[in-house]
Length: 257
Image (tube, rainbow, N blue to C red; front, side, top):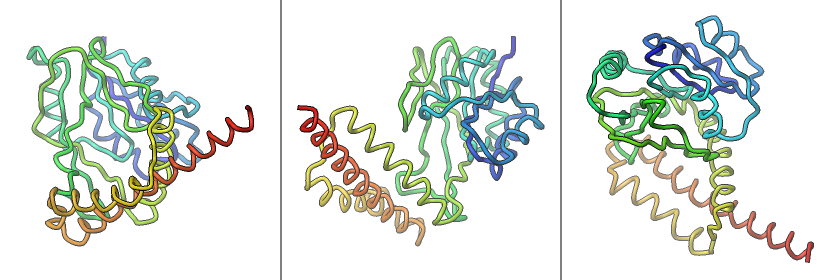
């Protein structure tokens, strides 16, 4: 039985997937769940020894659950395609999964590269995420976006970092911006959240103050200002999209009445 399985979800990630999978060579098996890539993602993954499963997109949580279900390892390490294990983290994980510490999972720090600069403030760092866990004790929830691991058992902390190459260009940022604000609005709508005028007017500046001043984003230079401004914009757009969904829903109810 393999001791460590790596799970990665992909769609058109040929620019990132090689770096990601090479960092996961400590794993006994690598599972890639692909959602219809039209580039060389699948070819690259298979050439690096990954087991690739093509699955229709149903959300981040569903895709990662699918990957976990295909894995045979006692432990699961989950990465996104634009992430990699630092060499220090790879060594630490190798030790952790062989040690009998009593932990069912581990939080790992994530460091994000934004437009070529590593970000240490803005609320982006250390950004602890639960990505290493025993398969028998945990799994991802079914959230469409902002998925997380639901774990039964004690959780420890590792010292080294996941390296996150999330936003290489402004264009790349806004591609993700459109996707995440839409998914966030849809998830909020399904959970019954409201979007009032004061959410759209006041929450964005509060978000900017939080990221730039309270979370010390100004220490990250111009990139810190851009992140804080974009974060505020994302709040405004998400609540605007939510407001539109609510109006559409009411219009549909009136039509069906």
